[in-house]
Image (cartoon, rainbow, N blue to C red; front, top):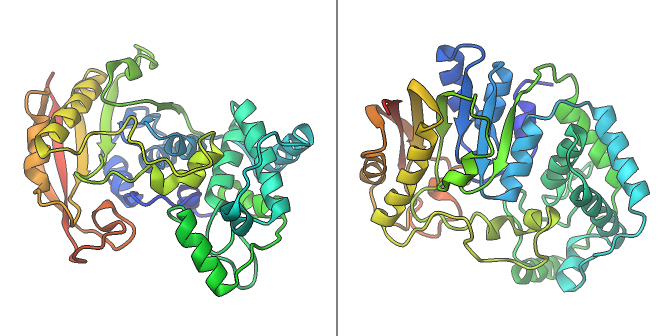
Length: 365
C-alpha cells in the first residue's frame, strides 16, 4: 500500500491534494505539534498529519465528512474490518428500515440493498471502535460509482462516484440504457477495499474529529484545554458553494439521514452576500485562534466559483481583519482542475479555470 492510498477511501468533490498539507507540514512542523482543520472535509489535513506523526483535530458540520475523517485516524487492520462486517450482519439479521420506491429498485440489487441496510443499522447502533469507523468509510466510498468492466468495486448501478445521483435523472438514465443494478458480493467488496486502504498501515494516528459548526464556540468546548495548536491548514467553502449536503445525499442517508434528497442548509455558512460570508468566516478564525499557541501559523487555500461575481482575495482578507491573525504572505495555488476542486464543481457556467490562493497568517492574539 502506498502511503497516500487511505486518503482516497471515498471520493469527495471539494478535496485539496494531499501534497498541500503534506509539503507544508513535512518541511516546517515539529513532531508532536498539533494540527487543526476547522473545515476538514474528507480529512486530507488529518491524514497528512498522521503520515508525519502529528496529532490533529478536524471539525466539520457534515456527518459524511466526519465519518471519512475519522477513518483517516483509525488504527485497525483489514482482518478486523472484515470480521466486524460479518459480526454486524449476524447481529442485524433483519434490518428495520429498507427504503423502497423506483429509485432504490434501480439503484441497488434487492439483496445488496438489504445487506447495506443491515450494515447501516449496525453502525448507527455503535460506531465507536476503529474497525467500525473504517468499515463505515469503506461502505461510504463504495456506495455509488461506475460499474466495473472486469470486477465490481461499487455497490450501485452505474453512477458518479463523487456525488450522488439525483433520483429522477438517474432513473431516466438507467431505464434508457436498460441498466439493471448488479448482484454483487458485498463482503468481497469490503474485503477488497479493506486490504487496499488498511493493509500494512504503519503510522499510528492520534487526534480527534468533531462534528459541529466551526463558527460556534461551543463546538470547541469538546476539546481538551491542554491542546495548543501550532498549525491550522484548511480550505473553507468558496463563496457560493452551497451544495455539499444535497450532493452527498446517499452517503448522508447511510450515516442516518433521510432516504430523500435534503436541500436544507443547516449548519452551513451563509452565502447571501460577500460581507455576511466574510463575517461568518471571521468567527471561525477567531475560534481557532483561541486554541493556538503564540506564533501559530494559519494557511488557507481559497478561490472562487464561476457563477459568482466576487473576487476571493477581498473576501478572505476581510474575514481575517481584527481576528488576532496577521497576514504574512499570499501565494498563488495555481488553477482548479475540472471536477476535483471547488472552483469548477458541476459548473454550467464558463469552464474557465479560476486561480486559487494560499494565504499565510500568524497568530498574535
